[in-house]
Image (cartoon, rainbow, N blue to C red; front, side, top):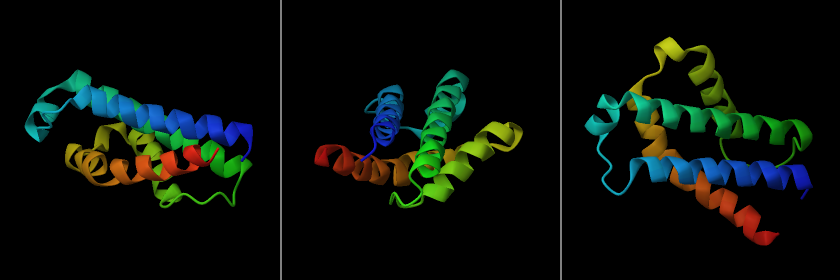
Length: 112
């Protein structure tokens, strides 16, 4: 694995861990929705995840990450469609997709 790819995988892992830290053990959608600072922090980490994935795909287009294109598209949606960001969609990403992505990333990093 290229050194840059490993660095970006680590960045993705760090952002996922940051989101988990922000949310703590008591994950409550309504608390999330009411807390603008928390929402913005989570959105920023999602932007970082998407940008890191974009960079991986540019330098190693054959690198296999499930849903890589959707991850990049989500980053673009959060940045460029900031006024249309849907808290329910973000919460679904946090709850359903980030745990799977974290496992996938950790498998790659553990191989190194």
